[in-house]
Image 1 (cartoon, rainbow, N blue to C red):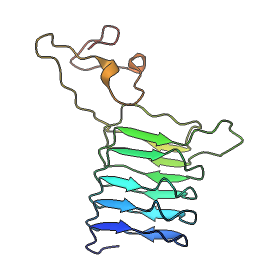
Image 2 (image 1 turned 180 degrees about the horizontal axis):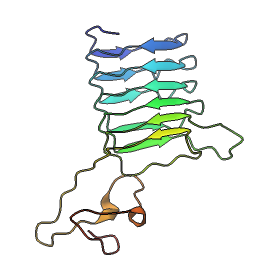
Image 3 (image 1 turned 90 degrees about the vertical axis):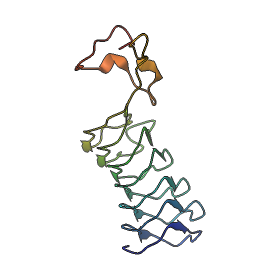
Image 4 (image 1 turned 60 degrees about the vertical axis):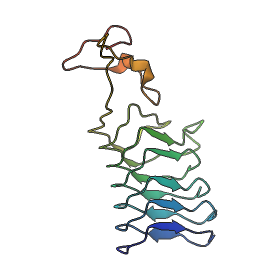
Length: 173
């Protein structure tokens, strides 16, 4: 941590903990490091991609304060702590167990300050922080409307609680 690294790639199968926070990293590729990696702290970088798909033992991921737009954790059944706040995430995919008995689920998730339009977890996290998720839209200038079904992820217009400065008719603002 606290170096001037701009990229990081490893195929080591023996790494268990990596702290590469506070650098200038734009990409991390641990896809060749199958197996042992349990904790990764890559926060406070300039990451636009994070390849950790093969690191299925990962239980702690801290990737806050980067420029990530998507994060796929569907292979990470042991994930217990996730801080992906202060990125540009529009998509966050997490492991969804078939049964509550298969996995205890994620205990802590902080996905605040992103552009997420929906969240789906198979099991309710013990602690979930998801405030300040803002997704900018472009309104059709002629019709002055926006189709909510065009939002990324699995956004459900029926779950809108309140609107300020707009009205909704079915799926149209």
